[in-house]
Each structure stands twice: as structure tokens, then as C-alpha cells.
Image 1 (cartoon, rainbow, N blue to C red):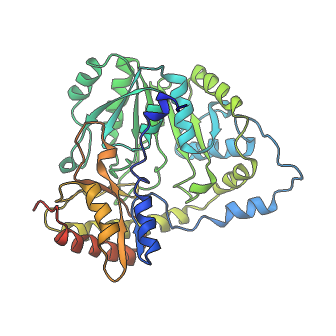
Image 2 (cartoon, one colour):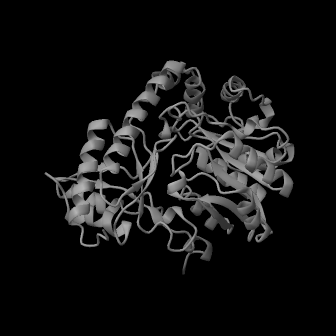
Image 3 (cartoon, rainbow, N blue to C red):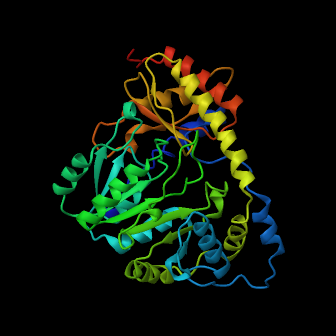
Length: 400
């Protein structure tokens, strides 16, 4: 007996694939600084836990498949605060942003259809693409340009050459690049989608994480794309609540919402207690985000300053989120990370990063890159950067 060809075509997450090597280092008594995964160390607001403690129920029951009313209304009010007005029935609650994307693509794309991404892109998208047998088409961006979009003509050429593209999937701010797309870039994608009659799936889970006066312009503020647009959102990063697994799908396209709702019904409901806690999180004061952004700005600045002093390293200054895509002077970034975990340490400490190749659709691209998540405190980031600096000096596969 064997498993399906579909699942055999699904690769291992580049974010987590080297965990066995990290566990091996830990089993030898080493400390591993985890820069591979976007798990914030910021404290989850107490509002989440207090709401669950104060919730009175004797039975954990199935709740409405579209989500609990108090959470939907909280999200509705949240978007209204950003100048985006959505009706109650235009919001569906999901088990995290990942399920939101899975259900959306199940509703939009058939086997063999295509989705346009901007590479490098969030590697875990690939699991969904492969599982649904959807083909990925990529538009490339460069670190030297801050990973911002190429000209409209270049994107349209890709669309013209791939007539089965059903949607453009774009995270803003970007993961893994930290790019915050300008209003002009958001308008550009909006125009392309409207002119070519394709969907926009806007992954906006990092909306609050923008630095130095940058503004995250939501696709929900663009006019004329109401039927094209599906927004994917989540509490995971915004409120440092990754483990709650609460996300949502938002769209004014009634047919899309109706079709996705059928899928929501098939998985019955999103967990009740987590929705109770999530609804309370939307009452978090603005001061929380101010403090969090100040902390991430310090971490970003520390990472960038340290990387900029390393010979042969190319690192753009992230504008948002909490990731940086870094080009290293090595033959193979995955081999380098494995070497760090298996053979190198400073005073019993080493580093784990996500190899960059898995964030690209173009074969061979990103082979000497890593994604770094600056989700550790400043002192730990400094220690991790020193390990990388010294490791690069000793790595046998160094190219500079």
C-alpha cells in the first residue's frame, strides 16, 4: 500500500525541515537560537486569557460554522477603524490564516489552475498548492530593490503567458521579505486583477508591523475590486497568539463567501474558547502596538546593523513584518545551517535559520539565502549574529 500521489508531491516545510538537526544539537547540551520560525516571544495580551476564564458554559459545543457573532462583530469593527466597511455576512472565521487560504483556494481554483505569487514568497503556501494540485507561477523580485514589485509590463507578460492564472496571492507586509508595498504598488496589482478578471488573495496578517513611517495600504481600501478581492487575516502575529489558530476570510464577493461557507460547514466549527479569547483581543489598546513596534524596530535595526558588517552578506532593510531575506557568501544555505547545527557552536550556542531555496518557485533560486525571523530579544539577536559571523569565517563552503 502507498499514500496518494498528491501527498507524495508535498514537500517538507523549509521553515521546520531542519528541526531534527536542532533537536540533535539540543540533545548534546547546546543552546539553539531559533531564527527560523515566526513565533513571536512577545507576551499575548491578558485579555485573551481573562475572557476565557470569565466565559460561562457547561458544554463546549459546536458554534456557528461561519464563526461566533461576538468575534465576527469584533473583526467588523476592527476593519471599520481602518476605513473598511464589511457586513457581518462578509466575514468567515477560520482555524488560522492557513485554513483561510486553503478554503479560499479550494473555492477558487481547479486542479491544474495557476496562482501568481511574487518570489520570494511564504514557503508554506507551497503545501497548499501541492495538496490542491494548483500550479504556482512566480514574478521575481530582487534584494537590491528591496523586493518591491517589477514594472506592470513584466507582471502582465507573465499573466499573458499563463492563461490559467486564477488569482494573485500577495502578503503585505511581506513574508519572508519584510517588504511593505506602496499605495502605487497596491493600486498596480488592483488594476492588473481587474483588467484580467482574476482574483486577489491579500494576506494581510502583518498589517500593524510597519516601521519608520511606512504605511500598510490594504487592498480593502482600493475601489473597483470588490468582486476580485479576498482578504486573509489572523490574530496569530498581531496579538502574538499563534497557538490560538484563529483567522478569517473577508470578501464582498457574495458567491465566493457562499462557496467557502459550504467548506466551513463541512469542518463544523472553529473552537469555541479560542474564539471567545480572540474576540477580546480586538479590545487591545493602541499602546500595545506602539510598544511592540518599538521593540521590533530595535530588533530589526540590530539585525540589519550586524548583517551589514559581515563580508559578502547582502541584506535589505525590512520595512515591515519581522523577517529578513539574507544572501550569504556560501555554496548552499541549507548545508550551512546544517553545519551550524551539527558542527559549529560558540560556548555551546548555535543558530537555526530557514534555508531560502524553499521560498522560491524558480529552480535554483535562493540556494544561498536564508530567511531570518527577528523574534528574539536584542541581546539574543546580537549573540546569534556573532555565531553566524564566526560561522561564515570557518564554513568550508564559503564563497568569498
